[in-house]
Length: 139
Length: 136
Image (cartoon, rainbow over all chains, first blue to last red; front, top):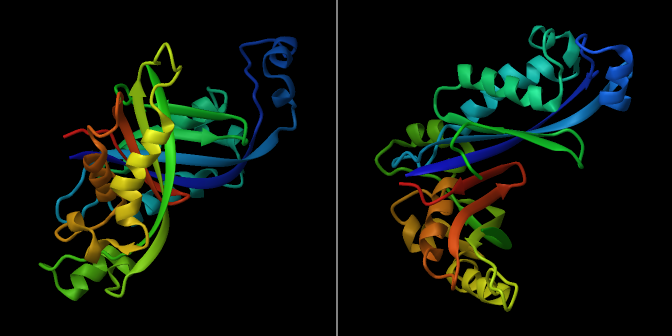
């Protein structure tokens, strides 16, 4: 029986949306105030959904403590209270929340083996949320 | 196709325990949830149904009917109950969030007039939930 477990985490980070592939003027036009050279920050809510078979003995898709500890080590300890632009993974990609979700999915998939990471959804503000899901997972 | 979601709430107590394991094994696997005196949560249930809009009523489903089904099949059975001791499906399986989502799906499947069940989401806490889509 396949089911999904969702867990929400919070982290605070700064970023600047800017790409060297565009001119200064074009960057300002595309990214608006997010292109401010000094950066700005958000309190991100990161919702991770994992999928797997419900273990008939425990009744669980995965060990929640193991998931929390994996997300803490791989995501929160890495990104919380940092400038996203300074991370190696964002040297060649712009740290938009879309790209952030893909990176979170990549890091968790590599580190968490108990269940499949099927969705990463991040709320950048209470008005903006972005979601990355694996192919075939339709909510 | 339109998806429509209705919320309901219930408050219940539970614990996690496996009789085949020692007390120590239960504590290791389930942590503080293994306290046999139980503990409780305010659960939020989100039921999403899928269907087409009726051209006359403009509804996918009559919300009053859906509310009544949720009340009769779930809230009336789970609310202010001890899930392990008073709800039949949890006599032999732990009332984890995942199992509660599956059990609610089984209770609702086929009972919502004119619409198909799409997703059952159960929040145990605002930051912890389980989804079930009827997959085997």
